[in-house]
Image (cartoon, rainbow, N blue to C red; front, side, top):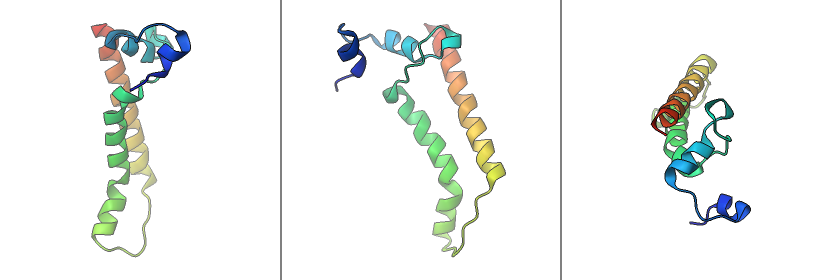
Length: 94
């Protein structure tokens, strides 16, 4: 897989720790350059949580769907918290 950063910067591919550091937010001494490879599992889980009520409606053959915005907001906050915790762990590890 070709990564964009080495192509842009003209330097050899980054090590895993360097790439993780670049992905950290600025407040954690990173550049905020998201790493889609490392974020894929996190984003997939967040998507699964957000669509779970719709999936249950389909399974139950419901005709009308309604979105619970309070539950959706909780899912969004939970996903954001998990992402921030992961970033904090990465910062401490590096």
